[in-house]
Length: 338
Length: 269
Image 1: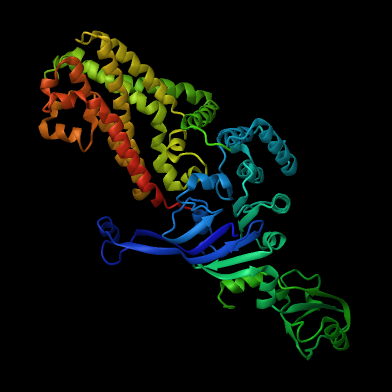
Image 2: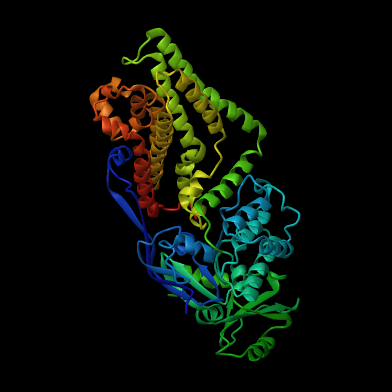
């Protein structure tokens, strides 16, 4: 049984229409015309218990709007969503007990109080008994290394510290479902790694269902098996991360670093195309001595290509590089692959 | 995880709000004094006015002062527990209301505990002080029944003001900025409701009983206690029931609030 369901989910926002012609702003004060914007336009998906799903899309695609409907913040215009059998907008308070939510852009902690106080208030609100509370805070403090700033007011925390605090606040009541909306936005590499590791561990050991939105493809590659990609309020892709790459970017790159005295020439190797070195996405150590060949493993095997390439070039070093998820996704956003 | 009572949740959240306010000591003392000073000037102004003219709308100093004191006490009963409602409009506009909806606690309860209203303690000090003094001096033969009626009237008045403010909170989900309306309501209540409202003429008086029901805050029940119901163009039985307007106005305001809440648009991502 799916733990999260969205069926033909639609959310429209309306705002006073922008008028044209003479004195538009003045006339707008008396106008009843409204512009309607469909932020989410018939979204369908299901998430099984224990899944860790990446919910991706460019800015303004409707990601946050979907999350806000699933968490009970927004009421759908039409369609249905269900979270653990409840309709979040109708059964808001009960739904709130089943889920934990973190918005990277906005804290849910008490701004003026020490972090620990926020935890205690939440524990009281969720009616946790003292032993459970102490055990959980103890565990989180260890896993996320909170001990240095537990007694610091939230307003004085760094972004990384605050995000860790927010994550704990969202998980104190042991929710079976976690919604994380850009939890790693603005974090440095170390803080990000710690957070993603914690999320992966929570999903693995406690079987917590996680829905994660992010722009960070590293997060996605590290955490998600399944991704849902939306744009302009509709689902473009829903499925395995590896299959997405196979389907939309079936090729790989062979990167050759040529020997100093080797003469660069235009090679004609069957089933391989020479492409710009920038296509690989990583910085090559000797760009002026590098040749990048794109090939489809279904047409030519990697050893065969290497053999052929060594006949043409005098090769110092070589490596095989897979296409980056970012490129796959950005092509998907651009509508090149639909 | 059993459900808690509203009262328990209120205590938890209000305690956190108070702790947050106590983090700033200077602010604590200055706002406390500010509350007394702000409402105190109103009372002084009244004193000057009556000292000059003696009567307002046929009412003497001790009577008007009594109405005014009831108004202040009622206001305290709104502003101490519910005063944080004034931040709703801001929370709805900048999306902070999101977090209210993410917690398994009644949203209204979370709004009123958004911040502890320190200044309100000044209001309360002044309000109940004035009520004790001017109640003593008012031409009323106090009996236990009349004291009981006074308590109901003051509580009812507080609820009327709460109901009006709750209505504006509901409005903020659709109108986004209701600041000027709320200030208008707040200052109208401050300016008018401490006076004999019949002095503004019949039409205005009826408006004060219906559209903008501030007559119930102190004036109507005060006429009952002062034996001046004949001044009021309403049947005496209706005037006598005026403390009941509190729960009625609050219920109307609250149901409007819950009806409008699903229209919250959660700005920002």
